[in-house]
Amino acid sequence: MKTRLKALVAFSERTSLILPKLIFSITVWLCSVAHPLASYASPEFDRRYSLQSVGALKSSDNVDGLFANYVSEALKDYFSGQPRFTMQDLSTAQSVLDKSKLSYEKLIEDTKVLENLARATRSETLIRTKIFKEGPRYRFTLDWLHAPKMDLLSTEVFYLDEPRDGNTLGAETIRAQLQLAMDRLIRKIPFVAQINGRDGDVVTINSGANLGLKKGDTVWVGTIDDVKKHPLLNTIAEWKIARTGAVQIEQVEPALAFGKIIEEEQSRPIARGQKITQISAAPPPAPQVIQETENDKPSVMDRPEPPRLGWISAAPQLGTFSRQFSSQSGTSGKTGGGIAYGGRSEAVLWLDRQWFTEGALGFSAFSFSQSDIVNGSSSTLKGSGTLMEAKVALGYSYLSGLNFFGAKGWIKAGYQTAIYSLPKFTAQNVNPVTWSGMLLGVGGDLPLRAGWTAQLNLDFGLLRSVKESGTARAAPISSTMVQFYFGTVYNLRPRLLFRTGVSFQSQGAEYADGASLNHKTIALVPSFVIPF
Image (cartoon, rainbow, N blue to C red):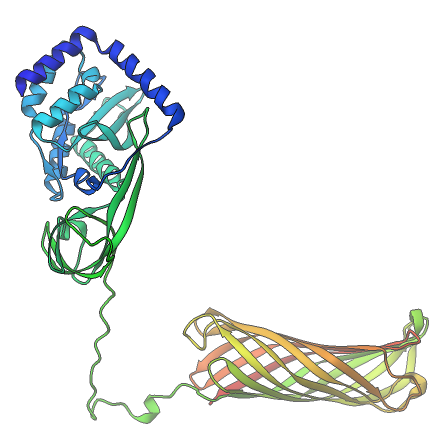
């Protein structure tokens, strides 16, 4: 071995490998014109890429071998903690390279020299480290080479800044950065371990606790179908790995693991040499259920049941009422309003986790005065009225998660009516009026922080109708009904919530002669909600 390596090194010194490299590059270039990527296809891929033995070459640098000992010790320490790999002794072969008259930097770039070195030392792979001082920092390049052709499996580059004020790089700093770079270098390969043996449906894996495996984990197994190599750069460009099955880990040792096959492709059974491509952690253990004795159980008052049927609420409401009637183009009409006060009650019945029914009943009383919309003069009319409103609907909730009281949205459809009892003053364009029709509503709850939830609801009137008493005007040609609510809910107790918000209602009608009628109410609605 030593004689052959010496002869090869001597040959490299005489020829400097300039002409062979030139001929080889031209030949590869001509081939690559027709085939940009060279492909290998062989059932032996799993065996060829076992990647179990590795040799670490002495590093090269442009600072007189300053880092050689640091790198050598760092790599020895690294692979001593990696039972997946067997580190080969390159000391004999390394001494031959060191005695060569050709520069060491050129030797470790020579493919033929490295091929013979790997063969002589029985190394499946080699780690080549090159360090260059570039101004105030050092560039470290790690190459992972695969024998026998010295294909580049992966490469990793990192930088270290030169210390200032006359200090030098510490050995621990170099060691730590090199070991992190080695982790990244190895992770670039699309498998983390391999099957070492199989007996029935039990397999052995060449990694264990060192890979973080635990009992109950599931590992996915695959076989290498194809490896594509760049013809010019000698780098592995693509791995094609087909899944063959899954194994559940049953026993873990520091550098070995044993598992049972739980899934397998019948046409491609799991076999020795196949690769572990993915690890799925075992699910966490179920929480332990503690059996309570009769003496341990709290009283019924200490264990309130969650609401199951729905909720009811009652609320006062205080706000304003406004009314406007105008003729065509707004050339005449009246506008006015006043303070409105009253109350409102609502109820929701849950049919299941998604479907629900809803009902609401409200009453308000108000006084109002009017003025002319053209000149603003006050009207002699001063009156009062009431508003009676009712709504029933069927809805569907969309829950964002498993928590019924978490974020959710809803849509609903139903029927609503708003009855304004006003005095009959046709000359002042004031008459009782009723809006009614189908409704379509949307809304949602959004938890904000502990105990607080934002709530939004918007109802639109559909297929609306308007009836105005005491006037000879024809029925309106169109009408609108909109109700908007925005507020917050605070969870006081499991069976008591406080809700407050603002409610806005608007009803309108358009007549064939161009006249229009609009009613609006805005109210603050604080309420207590009782789930049951």
